Amino acid sequence: QVQLVESGGGLVQPGGSLRLSCAVPGFTSEYYAIGWFCRAPGKGREGVSFISSADGSTEYADSVKGRFTISRDIAKNTVHLQMNSLKPEDTAVYYCAASQRPGTPTVGWRYDYWGQGTQVTVSS
Image (cartoon, rainbow, N blue to C red):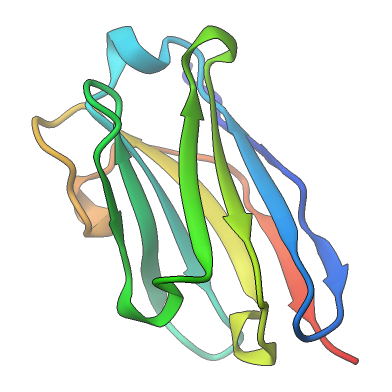
C-alpha cells in the first residue's frame, strides 16, 4: 500500500513561513506528478501547487503565486512546499497527493494516492 507522509505543519503568525514536506516512495519511477491540496474549515478541497516528477515543471493556484514554492528532492523522494508571507486565510489541512496519470494535473480526482494531511494554522 502506498503511503505518503506529510510533515512540517504548525502554528505561525501572519507573515510567517512554514515548509511542508511530503515523503513519496518511488517518486520518479511510480508517479507523473505530486500535488499539494488544502481543505479549510467549512470549505471544499482546493489545489495549491503541483510539480512534475519528470521535468520539475510547476503549477500554482492564483492565491499562492509569489508566496509558495514547490520543489522536489529526487535523491530523498521528497517534495517540499515552502510557504512564505502566510495569511490567516491559508489556515487549512494540507495534503500531498501522487498521480499515476500522464501530465501534471491540477484537480484532485486525477490523483491516486493521498497522505493523511498536516494542519497549518496562521493566527496571531
